[in-house]
Length: 239
Image 1 (cartoon, rainbow, N blue to C red):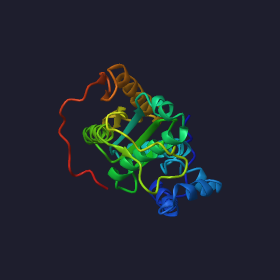
Image 2 (cartoon, rainbow, N blue to C red; image 1 turned 90 degrees about the vertical axis):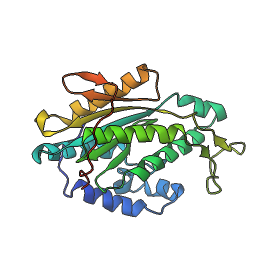
Image 3 (cartoon, helix red, strand yellow; image 1 turned 180 degrees about the horizontal axis):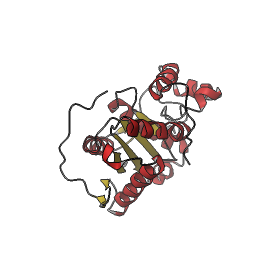
Image 4 (spheres, helix red, strand yellow; image 1 turned 30 degrees about the vertical axis):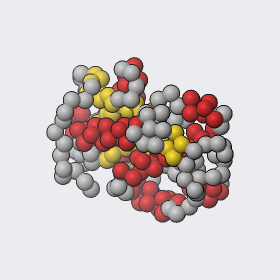
């Protein structure tokens, strides 16, 4: 699943270069730019998030860097609950794509560092990589994302015209929710593979679904899936 080839640039440099190209583009311009192999492999034309290819290429590099530097890293997997009903309400996949783009905007608006990665991993699933981030802070961020999406009114704006049904005005808050799984790495875990961290976050996300959706679950090494309790967050982890 994961590609382990080394890049000629750091993850931060790659992401900065490609997102500099994409910054300011409309969705239509992103779709056109997608035809370019370099940008198309990195930026999803529907949401503006990074692609699954980019995630699977760069996530192992970030995990290896955390191990090498004896640092920390967190992974969030966020899945939209009952997302099919959004398309069914309007018999239009364009509405679904538009909603996913708004969710990506929320994620990207809260991840400010050049090394943070917001990736569209599947149809309605996002992977968010937070290098140099303790798991307690990642859980706090996941809970913030969950609340922001739950209480967000997905309201049509004047610029959102192409592809949306004419009768579409808004999706009220509470229609869209997230189930989020979190896993983390620190030096005590040794040489853990990226695929294992992904599997842990994926299992935590599945357990969030099983718990009733619209919640966060954390994978704790040697203890399995846990409902996050109040955790002490650090304030000195920014890079």
